[in-house]
Length: 324
Ligand code: TXA
Ligand code: MG
Image 1 (cartoon, rainbow, N blue to C red):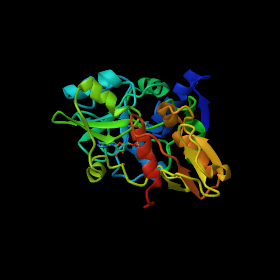
Image 2: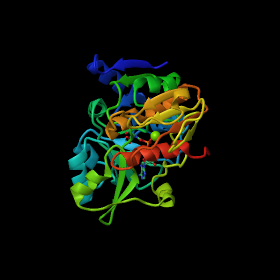
Image 3: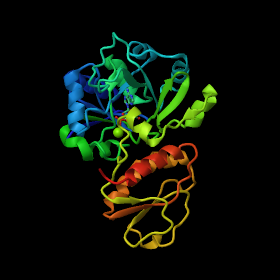
Image 4: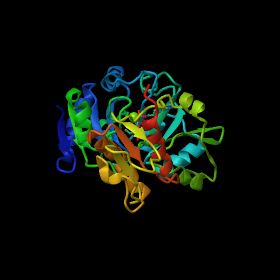
């Protein structure tokens, strides 16, 4: 199993050990504010190949490059004025921008799956210190087997990829718990490729421009990783449940009881107080817990669709989609 270093107890050893492992071309699991990432040197082809192997990820699905500061970002991508404003306002934070890669950037084409754009973001939290010390961008998808639920704590990573990994940095539960919002600015239009931890309404408030949601077909082409079935637990998932069948696990929101829940395998409330931030932070952990209850089906009660609800419902719909 992987060594786990607690960044709150041994921050310096965490950074030095992570950089030493990364320098050998091996991935390291690192905590970001969204989810835990499986990070490797974005300029090293062999290191990126290890990420795809460990996750069992299709090679046509590009990785996000993580940077520690604007200067590192500028060295690899070209900012248009709107993207620059968004980066200045929301970085470090849960926003990934799709931008043209600079000719002189040494981020390896394997990281971008051969596209001429890079997905780039500056994460909040401990991972940013690792990137700053390493001095190069880290390519990092979520630290889970491809198609499975993203990890929001070190134990999730250890349970899934632990046997393949050398090192996991543990900074406690991820603050946001949902992956970053992915946005592409094109000819002055804002296109949402993935709803995520940054509420699209905040992007609209800053820019005064509408955030366009592509239709499902367009989304598949634009963000190759947005496969319909994703975030899949072992159990089947039944959305917008109005009651609970015997033996089902129940995930609900806002402390609204559902008929039949007294004979549920387990009842988990994403946020009894009805707070979408809290619900986002609990979502993946509760999906794993519901799955671990052994129930064949997870019933999910209604979740409001506004604000972060958009990203929560997106992940639930992917979890419920027919498995490919
Ligand atoms: O919060 C996050 O974004 C986390 C943490 C670790 O940073 N990372 C993450 O990575 O969610 P991953 O690999 O699970 O999702 C990356 C998504 C995929 O859907 C991929 O297709 C899209 O980003 N993507 C990456 N580069 C792209 C590009 N150049 N153009 C379009 N989509 C891109
Ligand atoms: Mg992922």
